[in-house]
Amino acid sequence: MNSKFRYYILLIFSLLIIVSCNEAINDNLLDNNKPETHLFIYSDSEVSQQKSRLQVHWWGDDKDGLVIGYLFKWDGIENQWHFTTSNDSVFALPIGTVDTSYTFYVSSVDNSGNGIFDSEVYIGQENIGHEPFTDLNNNSVYDKGEPFFDFGAIDESPAFQKFPIKNSSPEITWNDLSILPEVSFPVMTVGWNAFDLDGNETIKEIHLALNDTSDFIVLSGSTRLVSLIVNDLNSQNPEMNVYINADESKLQDDKLKNLRLNDNNRLYIRGVDISGSKSEFLPLPDTSRSWYISKPKGELLIVDDFESGETAAEFYTARFNEFINDYDVIDLENISLPYESITFQNTLKLFKFIFWYSGSNPSIDLTNLVTQNYLQNGGKIAYSMTFQDSSANFDFSTQIAQTFLPIESFDSQKPISFMFAGANIIPSLEFSNYPSLENQTTVGFVRTFKVSEITASKVYDLTSSQINGSIALLNKTKNLFFIGLPLHQCDAKSSAGNLLKQVFVNEFGLN
Image (cartoon, rainbow, N blue to C red; front, side, top):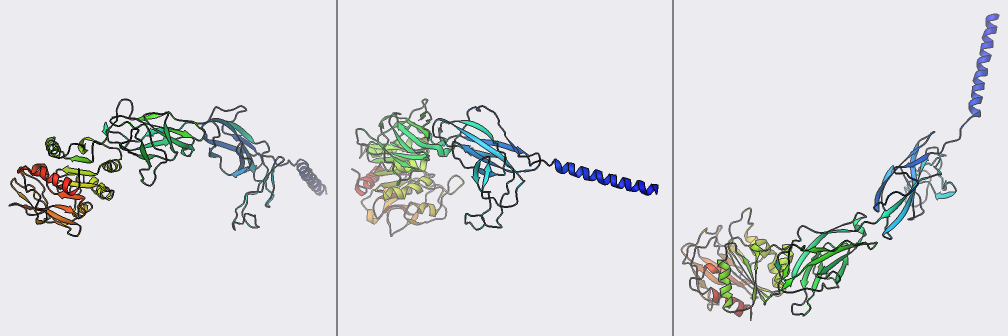
C-alpha cells in the first residue's frame, strides 16, 4: 500500500508541475517583434556630396522571424514605396539643379503574414497600397491563386539617409581618329567621346565652335561625329555646313561661322548637361600644333598617289602648267586625314576635275569608294596607274577594278613584271587626234584589258615585243579617262602633256 500510495503522490505532483508550467508559458506569450532596418551608410547628419548615380546597401534584423524583403522610397522624387528582396541597388537620381538632396527610406518586412492577400498595407498610419503579386493574366488586379508576397510585420521606423547630390560636369575628348593634318582644304570630319558620371543620357547639348568660342552652334547631346564642308568658297565671310554623323541627309540648321581661308584655324568643343553644367572648351588641334585651311585655287585637283620621290610630281606640275595656271595638289603619301574615306570624298567635291596618278600600288580602297560618288555629283576624273599582283598589302582583282573602271576583263592572268622602254602606245581610230606615246623607261605590272564597249571606248592600243592590247579608255559620258600606264614614264615623244590637255580641255571642258 505504501508503494502504491507513493506512486500516486508522484504522479499527481508531476501533473501539477506540467500544468503549472504550461499556464506560465501561456500567461507570458510575446507579441510578434517588428524587424529593424539598417543602411550601409548610416548617419543622423548629411553625408558628403555624392554623384547622381550611386549604390545604396541595406539589411534587416528580426528577433523572432525572417526578413522576406524591403520597402523603400526616395523622398523628393516620388511618394510611392517599392518592394524588393535585394539588399542593395544602384540608383540614377535626377538632376534638377547643380546641387540637390534626396532622402532614402527603407523598411524591413518579416514573414509573419496572415496567409491571405491584403489589398491595403500600412507603414504606421500610411497606406502604401496592396501586397505585391504576380499578375498571371495581366489584368492589373489580384486574382485568387496568383502568387503574392505575404507581408508580416513592417518596420514602422524606416532607416533613412539624406544624400546631397553633386552634379558632375560632362567630360569631352576628341577621339583617336581626330588628328588634323597641318594643311587641308576647307573640309574635315571629326569625332569625339562624351562621358558623364551622372549618365551619358544627362548630356543635353554639344557646343561646337570654330576659332571663336563665343560663337558656337548647338548640337544634340547624343552627337559624336560631324563632317564640316565649306558652304561658299567665294563668300567674304565663309561658313561651314555641318553634317551630323557625316550623313548628307542630316544637315544641321546652323552653320559653323568664323572660317579663315588661307589661314590657321582651330575647332573647339564642350558638353552641357541637363543642369546646365558645362565642360571646358577643348581645342583641336591643341595649342602645340596648327591647322592651316587652304582655299582651292581653281577647279582642278591633282591627286599624287605616287611613292617614288619628287620626279613624278615635278613632271605633272610642268605638264599642267602648259595649259592651266590655277590648280591644287594633294599628296596622299604625306597627308593623314581623320576619317579618311569620308574627308577625302568630301574634299574631291570641292573640285570639278581630278587627275589621279600612281605607280603599281595605288590607294585602291579610296578609288573604289570615291569614284562613282564623285562622278554622280558631276565631277570628271582621269587616272594614270598600273596594278601590281594581289598581296597581303595590296588587294586587287578584276572585280575590284570593275567597281570604278568600265572594263570586262584583263587580257592576261598575270601582268608582265617589266615592260622595257620603246613600247608604242597608239591611239585608236576613234581617237586618231590623240598623240602617240612611247615609254622612255621600264614600266612594271602592265596589264592590257578588254573595254566594256557598252559604256566606254578604247582610246589607246599598246604594242610591244612583250605585251599587246588595249591600255586606255574613255567612258561614253566623257567624265572618266583611264590609262594603265604612268604617263610620266611614257613621254619619250614629249607628247604626254598634249594627251593631258586633250583629255581635260577637249573632253572634260576644263577652261
